[in-house]
Image 1: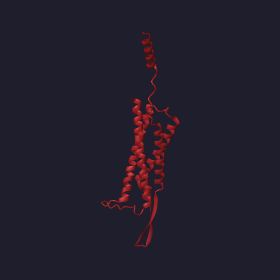
Image 2: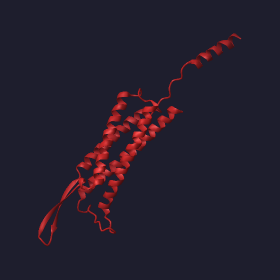
Image 3: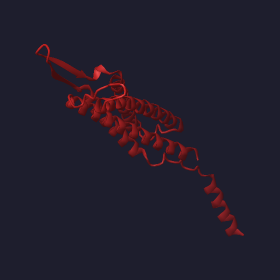
Image 4: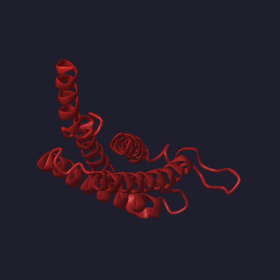
Length: 194
Protein backbone atom coordinates (compact mmCIF):
# COMPACT_ATOMS: atom_id res chain seq x y z
CA UNK A 1 0.00 0.00 0.00
CA UNK A 2 2.86 2.33 0.63
CA UNK A 3 3.92 2.18 -2.98
CA UNK A 4 0.45 2.98 -4.20
CA UNK A 5 0.16 6.01 -1.93
CA UNK A 6 3.60 7.29 -2.98
CA UNK A 7 2.75 6.95 -6.67
CA UNK A 8 -0.65 8.62 -6.28
CA UNK A 9 1.00 11.46 -4.35
CA UNK A 10 3.46 11.99 -7.21
CA UNK A 11 0.62 11.90 -9.75
CA UNK A 12 -1.37 14.45 -7.72
CA UNK A 13 1.69 16.73 -7.49
CA UNK A 14 2.25 16.45 -11.25
CA UNK A 15 -1.38 17.27 -11.92
CA UNK A 16 -1.17 20.36 -9.70
CA UNK A 17 1.74 21.85 -11.69
CA UNK A 18 0.66 24.58 -14.11
CA UNK A 19 0.58 23.63 -17.76
CA UNK A 20 2.87 25.78 -19.89
CA UNK A 21 1.00 27.97 -22.40
CA UNK A 22 0.72 26.83 -25.98
CA UNK A 23 3.15 28.63 -28.24
CA UNK A 24 1.93 30.77 -31.10
CA UNK A 25 2.41 27.90 -33.53
CA UNK A 26 6.08 28.38 -34.28
CA UNK A 27 5.58 30.97 -37.03
CA UNK A 28 7.10 33.99 -35.29
CA UNK A 29 10.24 33.98 -37.42
CA UNK A 30 8.24 33.43 -40.61
CA UNK A 31 5.87 36.24 -39.61
CA UNK A 32 8.69 38.74 -39.14
CA UNK A 33 10.42 37.59 -42.34
CA UNK A 34 7.21 37.96 -44.36
CA UNK A 35 6.63 41.42 -42.90
CA UNK A 36 10.17 42.44 -43.85
CA UNK A 37 9.60 41.02 -47.34
CA UNK A 38 6.29 42.90 -47.54
CA UNK A 39 8.10 46.12 -46.66
CA UNK A 40 10.71 45.53 -49.38
CA UNK A 41 8.13 44.61 -52.03
CA UNK A 42 5.83 47.56 -51.31
CA UNK A 43 8.75 49.99 -51.17
CA UNK A 44 10.03 48.73 -54.53
CA UNK A 45 6.53 48.97 -56.04
CA UNK A 46 6.18 52.47 -54.64
CA UNK A 47 9.47 53.65 -56.16
CA UNK A 48 8.74 52.02 -59.53
CA UNK A 49 5.26 53.55 -59.68
CA UNK A 50 6.40 57.01 -58.57
CA UNK A 51 9.05 57.10 -61.32
CA UNK A 52 6.61 56.04 -64.06
CA UNK A 53 6.69 58.90 -66.54
CA UNK A 54 7.66 59.26 -70.17
CA UNK A 55 7.33 61.96 -72.81
CA UNK A 56 6.89 61.03 -76.47
CA UNK A 57 7.09 63.45 -79.40
CA UNK A 58 4.16 63.07 -81.80
CA UNK A 59 4.28 64.77 -85.24
CA UNK A 60 1.28 66.78 -86.42
CA UNK A 61 1.38 66.40 -90.25
CA UNK A 62 -0.93 69.29 -91.15
CA UNK A 63 1.02 71.84 -89.15
CA UNK A 64 4.45 70.26 -89.55
CA UNK A 65 5.02 70.48 -85.81
CA UNK A 66 6.17 67.92 -83.26
CA UNK A 67 4.11 67.95 -80.04
CA UNK A 68 5.42 66.48 -76.77
CA UNK A 69 2.86 64.24 -75.04
CA UNK A 70 3.78 63.22 -71.46
CA UNK A 71 2.41 60.16 -69.66
CA UNK A 72 2.58 60.13 -65.85
CA UNK A 73 1.08 57.90 -63.19
CA UNK A 74 -0.78 60.98 -61.88
CA UNK A 75 -2.92 60.95 -65.03
CA UNK A 76 -5.01 58.02 -63.76
CA UNK A 77 -6.94 57.85 -60.48
CA UNK A 78 -6.36 54.08 -60.41
CA UNK A 79 -2.60 54.60 -60.31
CA UNK A 80 -2.94 57.23 -57.58
CA UNK A 81 -5.06 54.76 -55.58
CA UNK A 82 -2.35 52.12 -56.06
CA UNK A 83 0.31 54.58 -54.89
CA UNK A 84 -1.65 55.40 -51.72
CA UNK A 85 -2.31 51.70 -51.05
CA UNK A 86 1.39 50.94 -51.46
CA UNK A 87 2.31 53.81 -49.10
CA UNK A 88 0.01 52.76 -46.28
CA UNK A 89 0.87 49.07 -46.66
CA UNK A 90 4.59 49.87 -46.64
CA UNK A 91 4.19 51.87 -43.43
CA UNK A 92 2.01 49.16 -41.88
CA UNK A 93 4.54 46.43 -42.69
CA UNK A 94 7.38 48.48 -41.23
CA UNK A 95 5.50 49.25 -38.00
CA UNK A 96 4.33 45.68 -37.47
CA UNK A 97 7.75 44.16 -38.26
CA UNK A 98 9.49 46.51 -35.83
CA UNK A 99 6.76 45.89 -33.25
CA UNK A 100 7.17 42.12 -33.58
CA UNK A 101 10.94 42.38 -33.26
CA UNK A 102 10.83 44.69 -30.23
CA UNK A 103 8.09 42.88 -28.32
CA UNK A 104 9.12 39.36 -29.28
CA UNK A 105 6.75 36.67 -28.07
CA UNK A 106 5.82 38.55 -24.88
CA UNK A 107 3.05 40.50 -26.66
CA UNK A 108 1.69 37.49 -28.54
CA UNK A 109 -1.61 37.32 -26.72
CA UNK A 110 -4.74 36.09 -28.43
CA UNK A 111 -6.07 39.66 -28.51
CA UNK A 112 -2.94 40.99 -30.29
CA UNK A 113 -2.93 38.11 -32.77
CA UNK A 114 -6.61 38.73 -33.52
CA UNK A 115 -5.93 42.43 -34.07
CA UNK A 116 -3.05 41.63 -36.44
CA UNK A 117 -5.28 39.14 -38.26
CA UNK A 118 -7.95 41.79 -38.80
CA UNK A 119 -5.41 44.38 -39.98
CA UNK A 120 -3.70 41.90 -42.32
CA UNK A 121 -7.05 41.03 -43.90
CA UNK A 122 -7.95 44.73 -44.21
CA UNK A 123 -4.66 45.61 -45.89
CA UNK A 124 -4.88 42.53 -48.11
CA UNK A 125 -8.29 43.73 -49.31
CA UNK A 126 -7.02 47.27 -49.93
CA UNK A 127 -3.98 46.00 -51.84
CA UNK A 128 -6.05 43.54 -53.87
CA UNK A 129 -8.57 46.21 -54.89
CA UNK A 130 -5.82 48.70 -55.78
CA UNK A 131 -3.97 46.04 -57.76
CA UNK A 132 -7.14 45.12 -59.62
CA UNK A 133 -8.06 48.67 -60.53
CA UNK A 134 -4.53 49.59 -61.65
CA UNK A 135 -4.21 46.29 -63.49
CA UNK A 136 -7.43 47.00 -65.40
CA UNK A 137 -6.21 50.41 -66.51
CA UNK A 138 -2.81 48.95 -67.42
CA UNK A 139 -4.48 46.22 -69.48
CA UNK A 140 -6.44 48.80 -71.45
CA UNK A 141 -3.21 50.72 -72.03
CA UNK A 142 -1.55 47.52 -73.23
CA UNK A 143 -4.33 46.06 -75.39
CA UNK A 144 -6.76 48.93 -75.90
CA UNK A 145 -10.50 48.44 -76.36
CA UNK A 146 -11.81 48.42 -79.90
CA UNK A 147 -15.47 48.56 -78.81
CA UNK A 148 -15.05 51.90 -77.07
CA UNK A 149 -12.32 53.06 -79.49
CA UNK A 150 -9.70 53.33 -76.76
CA UNK A 151 -6.40 52.88 -78.50
CA UNK A 152 -3.52 51.05 -76.90
CA UNK A 153 -0.71 53.32 -75.78
CA UNK A 154 2.01 50.88 -74.72
CA UNK A 155 3.42 50.68 -78.24
CA UNK A 156 4.31 54.39 -77.95
CA UNK A 157 4.94 54.61 -74.18
CA UNK A 158 6.97 51.45 -73.64
CA UNK A 159 9.04 52.63 -70.66
CA UNK A 160 5.98 54.01 -68.88
CA UNK A 161 4.04 50.78 -69.39
CA UNK A 162 6.94 48.66 -68.10
CA UNK A 163 7.03 50.73 -64.91
CA UNK A 164 3.27 50.41 -64.44
CA UNK A 165 3.30 46.68 -65.18
CA UNK A 166 6.16 46.08 -62.75
CA UNK A 167 4.40 48.06 -60.04
CA UNK A 168 1.16 46.13 -60.54
CA UNK A 169 3.09 42.84 -60.37
CA UNK A 170 4.82 43.89 -57.13
CA UNK A 171 1.43 44.91 -55.72
CA UNK A 172 0.08 41.47 -56.55
CA UNK A 173 3.02 39.91 -54.70
CA UNK A 174 2.27 42.20 -51.72
CA UNK A 175 -1.37 41.07 -51.73
CA UNK A 176 -0.28 37.42 -51.68
CA UNK A 177 2.13 38.09 -48.79
CA UNK A 178 -0.66 39.75 -46.82
CA UNK A 179 -2.93 36.73 -47.37
CA UNK A 180 -0.11 34.46 -46.15
CA UNK A 181 0.33 36.66 -43.06
CA UNK A 182 -3.39 36.48 -42.37
CA UNK A 183 -3.27 32.67 -42.68
CA UNK A 184 -0.30 32.47 -40.28
CA UNK A 185 -2.06 34.67 -37.74
CA UNK A 186 -5.30 32.70 -38.09
CA UNK A 187 -3.38 29.46 -37.47
CA UNK A 188 -1.62 30.98 -34.44
CA UNK A 189 -4.95 32.16 -33.05
CA UNK A 190 -6.46 28.73 -33.65
CA UNK A 191 -3.59 27.06 -31.79
CA UNK A 192 -4.02 29.39 -28.83
CA UNK A 193 -7.76 28.86 -28.50
CA UNK A 194 -7.63 25.10 -28.89
